[in-house]
Image 1 (cartoon, rainbow, N blue to C red):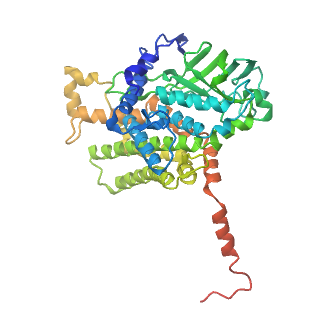
Image 2: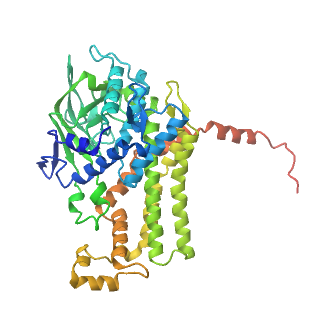
Image 3: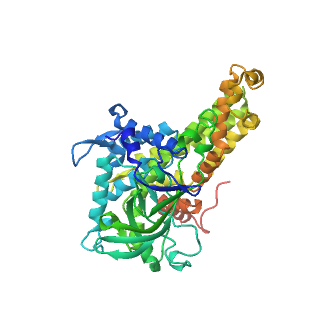
Length: 490
């Protein structure tokens, strides 16, 4: 199986990643991308170690492969999938939102439902074969695939066909016997700069007139004509691991993809000028359920870590037994448990679909997911409340602890009973990186819109709850009495 050495070596492929107006020569050596690349490398090392139980026998080849890239086919495999996803989530404490298992889950579900891609409009090709072949490539080569499935925010009132200018959203500019030429842009490729390939599609509902933009394809990051414009990276500003322990490890790079007449071979096309097909690939195949179940495993892990931070702060400040503080810690426990319970309930209510994919229960999954945009800010708020001014009254950097002329003041004035200055500052630096740094601000926005705007995510919860039964129960009860009924006993 792939190791960190294999993965890091593959990233020097001529990819065009732009930061501050300049192309990056090698992402593995650049301070903006080296930390997250090393983190992803560690994930591959964990999967390659049989002791972590992340491997499964590939039904097609008999080889040991990454379990997280295979579609679960029963309750036991789904439980094993969760345990494997938990290994990676624990390694990053939930702060890497687009680890390789996220899009890997979507691709596993795609491969289980080739009928959703059965389309012969690609000359001489059945696009379903392309889906199966690409999934095979991911499994065989342990690939890290990111995705960009949202149009640029040119206008939310209209869709691509109505925008001024040709091919703002990525679309098919030309069809050739051997493939298509695409032009335009797509967002938001989190981790794209350090991925192997990117799945490009559109999850936003399109109209019939948007046919040219109703396309799904995969593209190696180093493909000629593809440019990744990354948002401001935070890792280079992390003065040390001590001062910015999260930023210095987990700063994923979100990127806008720009395609300048990029050639895509037919074998890399999944959906072609098919507006209904875009929705079918996500929601008809089980991909949206499986991919977001992985995301909730990650989110539950992050909330557990934040709850632990809050409890540690209360202990160090000597207030962990105060009734008001216990109440806040209890609320944190409740919030974290809601998400964890949603993950487990979705597993408990999972069922096999008509193609044998064992899908987590949508009611439990989307029920917890629908509250994500409220749970995360509340968790941050409680941690802010418990930390108070402690995250502000910190030395500028670890230098104050290393400097003999300032260390005495740190030891005397920035300590707590039983907690020396070095450990107290270390804790509160971590808290600040979780709630107040640029990295933390990005995560706040990220969790708010992880699966779309809150009204979209609550729409998933509404449609998958199953309102027929509760409505029937209300109707039955209303029918059980009337104006001619007996008077209630007094």
